[in-house]
Image 1 (cartoon, rainbow, N blue to C red):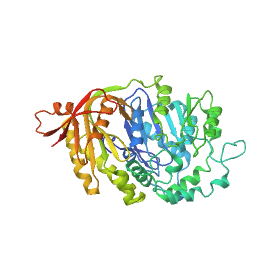
Image 2 (cartoon, one colour):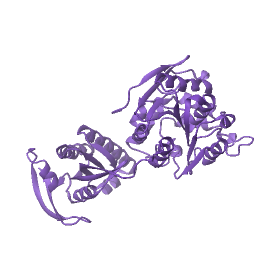
Image 3 (cartoon, helix red, strand yellow):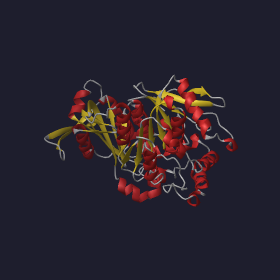
Image 4 (cartoon, rainbow, N blue to C red):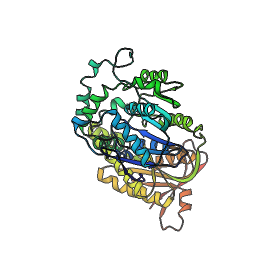
Length: 444
């Protein structure tokens, strides 16, 4: 939870509601989450944390856990609060942070709450955004978009059994990784957000929800965003919302992920930002000077064949965790995993070298060998990735490294002169796709 905002509590008549505030943008934005949440554990799920920070870059983002979930007061399963009590949670949090009028973002199952609040408290709603959401989930008279109830009767029970295992991601976020740090963090996020029994009880209640009567009462400007291949909540639900809310705008986006923070979340947040502020984020990449580190497992194909798929995936999970810990230890930024390696950046070349050497030593505990390549140069910051010549060159440097070796460009050597780090000259090399010859050095 590095850099996560502080958690506070707002008091309703019946409960203490956990909330956080992050950002100082021109518009207050209350995120009404899915029917489960945990304001602190959400910062451990890297795609979710990054998307929340993106939202907070143009707003004062207000986050909270509904009563009975996350860090808010628990309630007995037989006394789950009705929708109007959850509406009181929104009002209490807005009062606690001094927000007279705010935009609401209803995420999936949080949509019915956002809809009801916008209809019953129009004086406090500046704008409404509904993402992959619905007014009713089951089929009924005048609502062919819904799923027949007989097809969903066993879903709450299935969800109870699958909760906290990561199985739900295969439906709600098919692009999400099926193993590794993100998968592990999400599984924990589910477990601390709600217990299996609570999940079953809430989902049974969600299947009975119908807020269609509130839609014509909404007067706030409304944006409905829905991913067109969402199988969890199909886009017909979103189009219905846009048709029934006066002057609402519907935006269909490519993708199958119901959870908005998986998939191409930047495209989705671009729509939200433009709707709320009138400005879409700049497409021009920022440029910074940084040291790029690529790592690569030596003989990974042979090793995978030796231990088998299941054990190999376990080893890769351990490798991902080790790489992440080492990068954090040396104050770098882990950009992404590369299957059997990693890409990281550092604002200091000496720390990048120290991190690479530590990695090369640490992975031997996993019975692996890695090679590392480093170069310092100008990077393009591309939201969740980096690009530019420096990245391409570092990728070519690592290809020249031997097992267990940390290989660097002459640029890196020049920048750490006087640091006491010893190097061995590996001669000049013509690197694939890179002009001219480059002198490379191994860290002694």
